[in-house]
Length: 409
Image 1 (cartoon, rainbow, N blue to C red):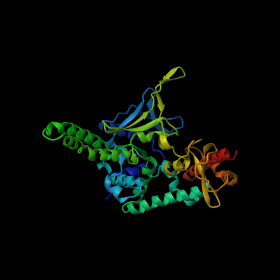
Image 2: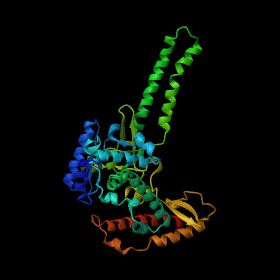
Image 3: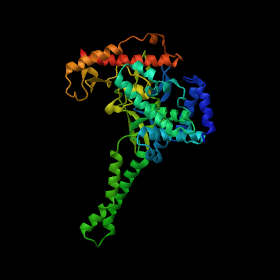
Image 4: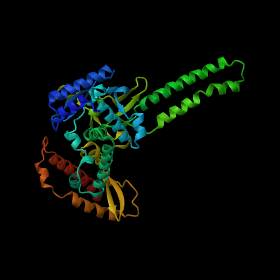
């Protein structure tokens, strides 16, 4: 059964297709902060809005630590969901859906209550939810096909998990897609257990010579080291596994910016996830006054890889202007080659010449540059979803044109 409390909550939130009133949003933010504080989170940052009304995370300029979130407050895929699903995002969405169905009985309810409702524009903007007609606004065949494949994966998840409510299943998937981050999150406590287990085994090994007083030195050494071996294997396996997906309350309020100097770190002693700067900047002086707080930008793709606008639009529902990690695929004679910013060729050319690639780039640019008159009607804050999606598609095409111009010139 779907919890009545969560359905009532969704019904209330869904009355507004877009952002809830400011007083409701502040109340939910306060509830989230109180829940995190009760679980011993450290929150020197706060939630604020910029001059355009965009909500984000603000932090004192002189603090390196943005926040510390206890591991028991983050949502990762549980063992049952990992067993049932091959794709990490499906496993995380299934775990989230289970918590949603619990309603107020869920440990994470204050976090769920803070998330965008099913009809929110931020979720409607996710490219993998667009219709074929809306995807055609991108005017780039390989990207459209990619978004359709991602949409098909979402549809498969809803079909598999939407017995009680397809709305809830779709909502869970969209939330997981748009808010999940990759990073070192402790592997559900296994990393911490492995480290402390290794320390215990090592301590016991040091005591072994005092226990086996009548054995040879070789036997003593063997007996001392054997307890460490399985613990070390477990530790190495836990620490070297691929990064895991998680939904991170408070941290996921921070907006995206490529090449941000913020990073995620797992705190072994406190068993928490830390968002911090690599350095603590000094307080900035603006207009003769110390500006105490500034907005926090976080690279959703991580400091190692970054993320292009296809992923940002397809999974998060927005486009980054002048994205240094942006790419586009050029198809010549059935062979695809990926190019990046500043004319960089990012994949093997497959016997394709640079001249052929530039010809293909000119052709794609012509299609992308076609004017869409309806986008002129779209304004920030409009309640017309279709107009906003047209505006998003136009922004995506503009960034791809920027990239193509760098390649051909």
